[in-house]
Image (cartoon, rainbow, N blue to C red; front, top):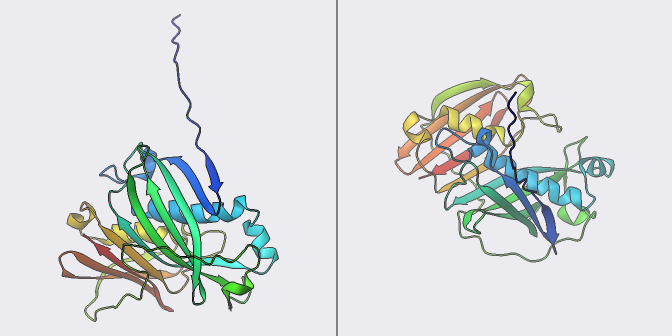
Length: 257
């Protein structure tokens, strides 16, 4: 009988706070990447939103604590500047922090670096606070579970503004919202839209490298909804993709190349 001995060095992935800034390390596993070995769009959305959740959670503001106090926090808009998409087996660090609110919405920034400290992605996002039962919007100054941030920094990507929609959108795909699309809030998780967007693109755009991506979430999609995906390809370096159900538009997005 033959025996084999392996020396395996185990790496520990950490998450920590430095002041009001939260850091979260993770290994970009094979299953989180696309056919080009790049981090998939859905995983990019998930990594950033999960880091926001973990930031609160490690400060004692868990999902249950939010619910007990009559709060639910939902992502409203996100804009990414993609310098270089993270690649399979990269060790990435997601850095996130809150900034001064923008009107009725919370504001949050992100930065993703690799194991060499190279900046790969920066992002800005807006979030709304609602009552989980009534879905009525709650003002940022009424969210008193932590101190209200008062400072803002400059974002050198495309702002989280309104996306103007053309009239000549064409139907690209139609999907039914299934059980595995949903999260604990009972609606389609924001990251799943990234997968739907990429699936509906022509193959030549699926393999191209994005420089910017932004998405606005307008209306919740729930179990059994039929989601139509419509797009416009008038500009060679910019694509618009929207998703809508019988209740109206769920999301609007822009992809830049």
